Length: 287
Ligand code: SF4
Image 1: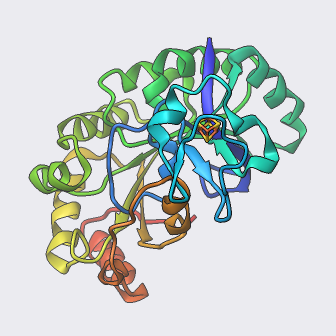
Image 2: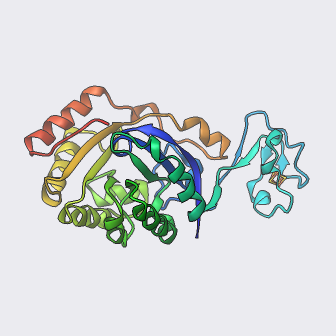
Image 3: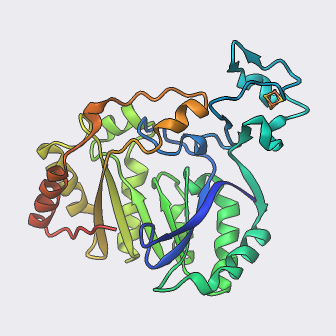
């Protein structure tokens, strides 16, 4: 089977233990407005343009007043996305699970300090069957595996035996607020965190702290109450402060960035959350 991904590179201990090769898989079912990877949201990839793209390589009249009509690109029979000089590219690369496995195997000497491979996104479970096939191949080769997921896929527990380290991002403790801003309700994510806890998986639950959405003291108590109820002592928690690292990519993707400066939270907010979690005997970490 084939896998669609938009980025691949090494990092150390941010997305699982040790030195890791991190694949960002294409496609996401959530619509969090602070997303740092807007090019990863569409399942089949996003057309991205450089700032000074003038459309001279386009034979399809897709540029109107220097603006690209991406609907015409979708039907294009001579896409310029493979011409580097065009300044237009498709975010998505496609490789078979065999090709990816071979590449990962060639990187094995780099997986020091308990490292391995992490699949993130987008949302990696959007390509569930291909991801499962890939994880099976990697397990057979004794390569450490991790996934970072929003936890919304109903069959996520099927992947548990194939994953050494699981990261689930949880944006809110209140399902109505979660659904209003991010899309799906929280129910399935809660069920999957419960299942991972029962299976005693190594689980890191990450909470992005967003001003005006989930970062008040009341919110900290709300998260702590939820996780106290559903998590086991194998769970760890991490708070990530809102950032704008993906902001520039929105224009390149023909999308509008809607977050304002009030979304930033102070470093002290993280400390307050950690203190409240400590009172509930929930263990926090920094990666
Ligand atoms: S992909 Fe096709 S329609 Fe889109 S800009 Fe390139 S040549 Fe034009």
